[in-house]
Image 1 (cartoon, rainbow, N blue to C red):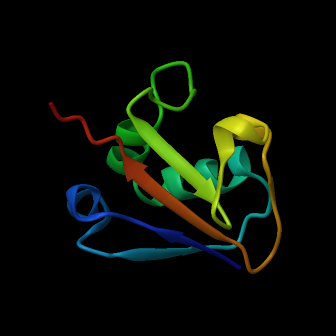
Image 2 (image 1 turned 90 degrees about the vertical axis):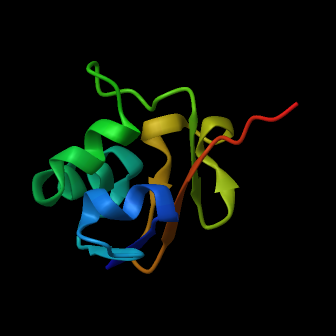
Image 3 (image 1 turned 30 degrees about the horizontal axis):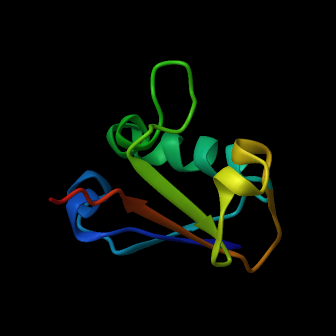
Amino acid sequence: MVTVLLPGPLRGEAGGASRLSVTATGTLRAVLDEMALAHPRLARRIRDERGELRRYVNVFVDGEDCRHSGGLATPVEDGAEVQVLPSVAGG
């Protein structure tokens, strides 16, 4: 089982849940694909129409930024924690 942690701005797309349990393992793509089946609106906020991660969304697998560890091919093992965070801009 993989735990997906969601920030406040995305929880509305997941019925208010702050965390989701996903049985898929193997890659981040597999985890997000399973999550998309139950929460398609949430999936559209995380991935674009090509299925790639949106530029303004950061995803961490066990604390490591997936953009630096394989993107959607990042390995995700049973018991992993996936954290989704929208980018924060300021000035």
